[in-house]
Length: 236
Ligand code: APR
Image (cartoon, rainbow, N blue to C red; front, side, top):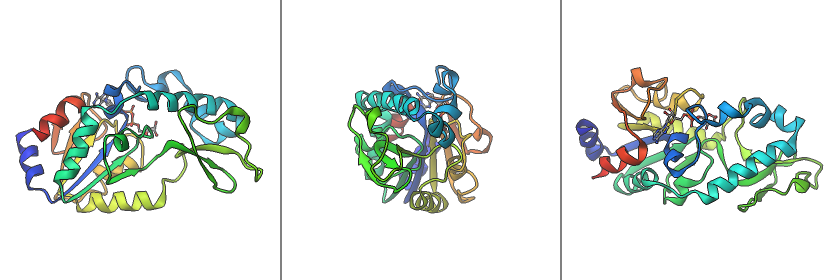
């Protein structure tokens, strides 16, 4: 931890990649760990274009539930610590795989939502967007006037990431002197590559995760702790 703190104090440019683990202490389930959503739900039925085409009502029922849980959840000390780190760093970029809006609610501004968010629905034909409130999308309003279907405005398996957000994240990872990887199992690409392939060789990469991940053997520093515990300690 000491070397990481010293490097963070000296760093002009910092890049952070987060995953669902940073929201675990806000009460939101992760995907692959104990109690993870992919343990009890079938990914291909709920988080894929094919699943949505087959049963849009089922998919919206699930996303409306997640959307409600996100709105009821509160950012935790880990989210707030990253918003504070942004204020202390001249060149800071936070790329998240999460769609729960908790980084935004914690005050992060230099934020790239690589997998979108549940704040809007998008028509799969004309691209029209519609903001969602805490109740989500009424099941009888899935059909869009243009003949298309309103879908969650997030990235499903097999779909491309938002072009601009991805490019900005890859550029930030390439110039960062310190990279923090927080609360992600680092098994989903291309996001996971931001901390390895896209990082510069000189970057000091630190992982904050209570468990081992797919990139633990390639980082410079491993902090086997939770986000809400380790991140505030880093800032103190
Ligand atoms: N603090 C930090 N990390 C934690 C905590 C915590 N309190 N609790 C759990 N973790 C870690 C787990 O050890 C695990 O490594 O968070 C990670 C969560 O991994 P996943 O469940 O795989 O979630 P994530 O990496 O965000 O998944 C990436 O996959 O399902 C798709 O698109 C979805 O964005 C998601 C992507």
